[in-house]
Image (cartoon, rainbow, N blue to C red):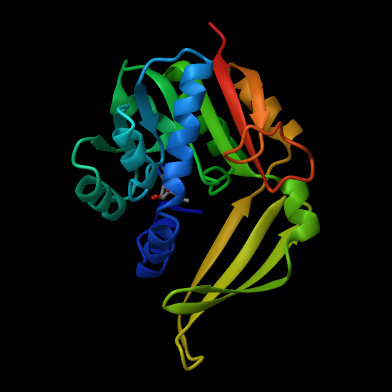
Length: 246
Ligand SMILES: C[S@@+](CC[C@H](N)C(=O)[O-])C[C@H]1O[C@@H](n2cnc3c(N)ncnc32)[C@H](O)[C@@H]1O
């Protein structure tokens, strides 16, 4: 995706509406990060990247973490600042975090809710290297599991994201391992009121693990979503806990 096409998606009213709908899940993530910090005896300085509208930052701040959120979208950041006045928010590109953050290092860096795969594989490598360079404790990457997606993703999926009925038409391309989705939003009368096109690269564990190692990380643990269940090949999401190799 180019910067312009991603802006069209992430800054649209439709997308923001979807992020608001999953706001509460931020609490689950904050509880999980809190437990992680106890298990690994980590400090409280957290970088939430990309932070979106601040749904995870909000609950992390409530749990007394010292939170910095970073996102490329001004619209997302404006909402995050209003939602979490106690946190610090920065506009920046996760492919080159040092450009915004400089030499600052964080005890915990979280990259949650399938926030890799928007751009090219090289861009994802840049994101991993960039995250490694600002991590002094652990980094957490949470993404969908390609092996689950290819066997469970329906070609057409209907969901209700108030106030819209949402129809996704998705196609998995085995050559590029990208899912191309056309998402249509219908009003209560069934009239189409808008649409968005997504393209996202999905990774299997062995691929993302190899990339993380190349980026200079050591794999500590792999869990299923925001649970403490060890990741299994059939799980929808993987949450990978990494520490930088010094
Ligand atoms: C799926 S949302 C996830 C937000 C947050 N992690 C959450 O769980 O609510 C993806 C976010 O990535 C941001 N984004 C996309 N490309 C980015 C980039 N190159 N650098 C920083 N943020 C980016 C978008 O603006 C959007 O807010």
